[in-house]
View 1 (tube, rainbow, N blue to C red):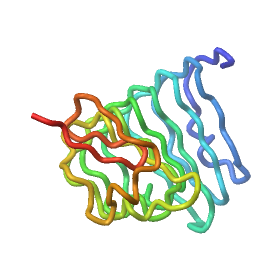
View 2: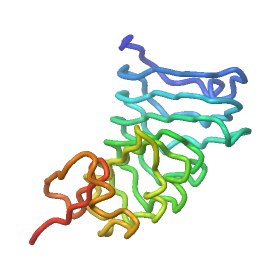
View 3: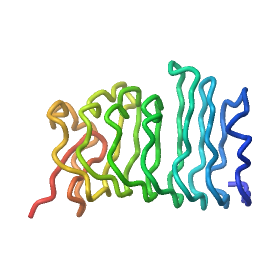
Length: 181
């Protein structure tokens, strides 16, 4: 919330000792540069005026924790397969389309993919989200195919209680409910 304006320089994604970027809720414009990550990195760029596709992430260590938060921008394109090693992902409230990569949830503690234009089936890997803080939100994606994978039964996944809205698939927390009618 520093009222920063302008664009993000492309060199920021190549800083060797980068640990965290937090430019949330500013007025940054343009595209997000690609990132070459060497250690655990947390990138927060939500609530700006950024456009273009999601940045590519190249990681030299897949055992590190990488979080990417780019919600509430004007981003489009598909979710890159390189995001399968991200442990925290928030791309909500953009215009991301296409299918969810099959192994996206294999390393993930949280995934906020809501309010986009994602389509196709929800990957079986969804049930791989584990831990006390594990959650996901896929609501607001009217082209996703229901139901959830069988491994995610209502009994196992009712942690956040039921939710209702006008989506074909309503997925909030670990709950699935199909639209009636």
